[in-house]
Length: 249
Image (tube, rainbow, N blue to C red):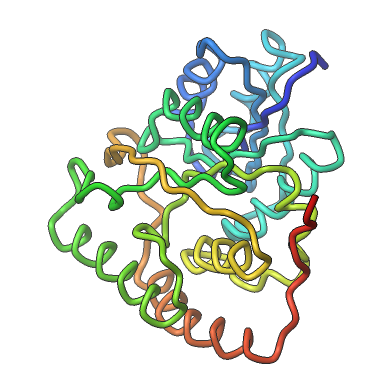
């Protein structure tokens, strides 16, 4: 493995149309990043495409295959633990479908490595509403979901449900990952809230979110339901829980 400080974790399920292109886009950036794919047994052969790509990028592309759909949250937790075991300093979350622009990885990395952030969030709402090709109903649902989360939790983050992020290693090693409860949409909220409760610095970096062109969205009403009720549960549980704190230098 070449010396590298950043790993991009990409969970996949049926992303054969996107997976090779997203990996090549990341590997073509002026800064070197490694990529870890967490594939939940995609029946469309996503995992096989990654294995073929590994022949070309053996030192930069890694794959964990899991049996069946186990949820976004558990995929990322698996990836976080792997990244910590392999000594990466910066750990990224990114979608496979190009809704997150790979070029923005460099901005997120800079926010953590040079600008003092412990968690950098690629934010759709910190500078207006920067969403392209979403139906208006979905834009409004997402925007007001973030407002709802801020009201309930007290998080001062414009995009509380964002899934494009960079963590400094210390954040993931401090958070008790096995205590993260949610698997879907609420997972993203829970990770931000836990990061905040552990005393870490969070910075939002403006991005433009573009709806996927290829493949099918994994969003569902049940995922939003988990977020709606999960936020209340998250806030309630936090009243009785002691969070590990960021170490002061």
